[in-house]
Length: 400
Ligand SMILES: Nc1ncnc2c1ncn2[C@@H]1O[C@H](COP(=O)(O)OP(=O)(O)OP(=O)(O)O)[C@@H](O)[C@H]1O
Ligand SMILES: [Mg+2]
Image (cartoon, rainbow, N blue to C red; front, top):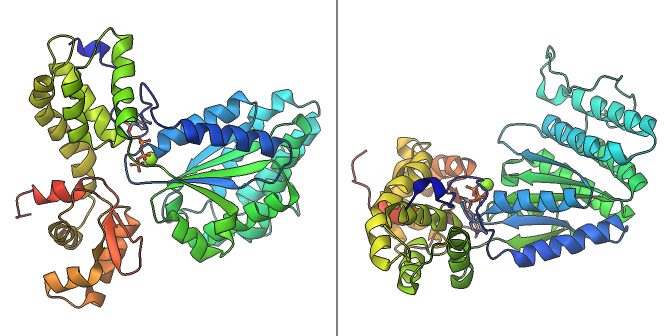
């Protein structure tokens, strides 16, 4: 059918034509926003899940929800080896700019921007002395607030001041942190401490994080109270009804329908993983000659969807690994016969299969965790963060 009208959107962070199966998360967040704005005790939210389940897309939708309620919002994507200071400063700058038009006292905004500037410019931890970076705030930097150089103290002060600006206008501030598992240990513990402090005073600022499945473990290793501090929401693959809805609703808007056998075949192929739902939906649309779309149409289109996934979803990640890391992952794949990414493989088995000492494999394992390709959910095991990655690797030719 007409590729120009193809509604499906495979791609990292691509807004889906229909956000299926996330009603509960959206409702929970509505309640959180309402409670926080009223100064009620509420926990910050953390979304966790495998690659391609729709964490980024959901985070963006939650952000829109907050904006609709006239909250100030900002978003960052954490990166390994990057301090949070500048991205957080930029995100809160954005949030306060959203709040400023509602605010009646411009000097309160100016005062906050002064603190923000002081916070942003305090980068001595990185050791870079000569650095021309500027936060894009015209006024002078404040002195003596959020500029101690200790990220934990500074973040508490900065968040407190941002929340107080939001209190003036009767809303709140939401800071969204994607790829939160990539925050450095110091930053994670500072974030926990700041959230802890703010939740005790009922200040209207929340952090909404998203990351890989081991993020809760990282947070609780950092601060033992983090389990009570965050509300964890596992973002998973779509159930059959939601997956069908993700495909059918956008098609129907274009006057196109699926035969129920076609939906069976599509669910078999995608396993309900949102990224795959979009990829198979897109290829099927392009190949189907007419409505209704049949199971045969899906089968004809599947190789194209798989070819695109092999390049865009799996291949791009596999290429980030060194030869030693690839060998490690191939061994993992060979040992995990389940198609599900959730299948955890004992690291001892990997060492045994490679006839190596477990300790000698630690560098490869740690590097793969850092690259976000595998994670360790339970002690002594590893699993792929990418759904169907084991299946993909097993289908690859052995040499390379
Ligand atoms: N609820 C949903 N219904 C339908 N499609 C969705 C849904 N959520 C996400 N998608 C689609 O899935 C794909 C992946 O979404 P997204 O990039 O948000 O995943 P992610 O969990 O952030 O992945 P990663 O861990 O790689 O960052 C996108 O193409 C998006 O359109
Ligand atoms: Mg993402």
